[in-house]
Every structure is written in C-alpha cells, then in structure tokens.
Length: 286
Image (cartoon, rainbow, N blue to C red; front, top):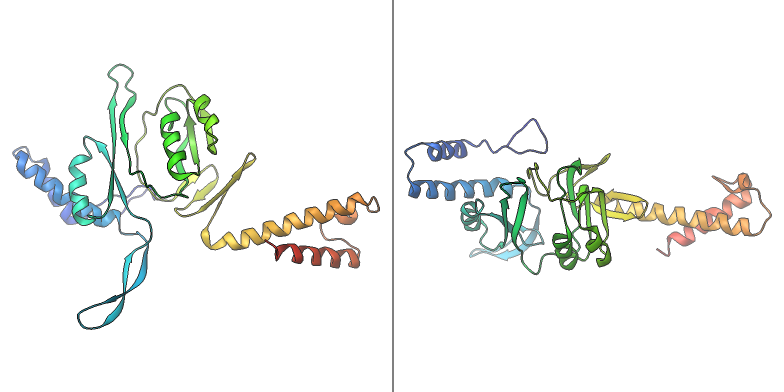
C-alpha cells in the first residue's frame, strides 16, 4: 500500500488491480461481479489487518510444543455501511470468521443532501475503556459528527467518552448523560461532505499527533495524548509536580518565606533538600 498522504492507504496490489479491472468491464455479469467482489474483499482484509498487534501463545503441534503468534487481545468488529458494505462483508468474514459484525444504515436526503441514519446496531459487548478520537480537521460548518443517539451508545458501551476535532449537536441531551466529550464546536445538522479514510490510524487533533493506543487524559482545561510506553514516566512527573505545589503552599501558609524563595529550586540548601525529600516521599505513594 502507498500514498502521498500518510493518512490514506491505497491498496495497489496487482491482484486487486486485476480484479477491479474485471469488475469494471461493461460485460461483467451479476454473478461474476459478486464473485469478484468477494475475492477482492478477502484481499483487502489481508491489507486492513496487516498491522494488527499479536502476542505469543504456547501451542502443541503434532510434532512438539512451540511458541506461535495470535491476534492480540480485543476481538475484531466489522461495521458494514448499508447497503454497499454488505458485499464486502462476506469476503472479510471468510478471512476472519470470528469477527463480530455491526451494521449502520444511511441514506442521503434528496432535498438537503444530508446523510440520515436510519439504522444502527453494533455488538452489545463492545470493548470497554476505548475512547473514540475523531479527526474532522476542525469542521463544524455543514455538519457535525455525533448527536445524542451515537453519544449515548458510546457512553453506554465504553463508559469513557470521545474527542472530536469537529462538531457535535443535540448537546442538551448529551450533557445530562455525564459523558466526557471534547469537541471543536456545535451545529444544528448532521455530518456531510466527509469521507472515512481510515480507522485506527495516526491522526492530528489540534497540534497533537494521536496514535492508536495512546492514553487520553483530560479535564475542563485541556487534553493530553500519552504514548503507552510514556505513561509511567508521565504519572511520575505529575506526582512530582503535585508534591512540589503542595510543599510550596504549605510553606506559604507559614508566612515566613517570600515566593521567590520557594519557586523553582529554593536557593536555601536546607529548603532545597527538604523539597527533594518531600517529592520523593510523595512519588512513592502514587
């Protein structure tokens, strides 16, 4: 796969190109088209799952025990957009028969040209602890990503929340649910003029690059996206900062020191040593 845009993956395998050519022929029959689409979707499945994480398992072969690879952790969900996605679904399931299936029904309003959702059904046991992060390049005009029904579903199935670099609507119904949501703006209508270019790919949210698997940490002031291998160091640094702030406020309560004597690294060696010990003691309690 290659593309000038790092967020768009073009499947240019010779077999894919060959089967696309056969499907596009004017004299292609309905039967051959369906067969080719099934074969094409199986080839696409290999590319789509190319970067799925794996883990080692111990198995026993007819000859001996060995360590082998299996797809890691969470089960795969194939979401079919009705009706066009139905033809691709069967081929995908041939390659990954254990995947769960969801369906989303959409049609375009002939007058407003807006996408209207008429059906939405996903597996009830979608993995918890996943945070939905969507890159709409800050788009709020001409359509929003999520309204109250999708927000309610995400909240009930994940218990987490979402980050949308774009718009939301029906906030009057979303806010009472208590779901944490970070969004660029609001609007009165549903999404339009947007195409899905990838799922679980690197994206940009504001000035931050977000990778699949990053830990999302946020409050009313902002968001952090933390790579998993840096989480322990981030927690340690945050504990140190909190301990420093607590120590400074405790010293201020004594009314013995100027702020310049406490901020940064105290110039008094005794105070500097006391602060260092205080931070170490509180970091070990995290």
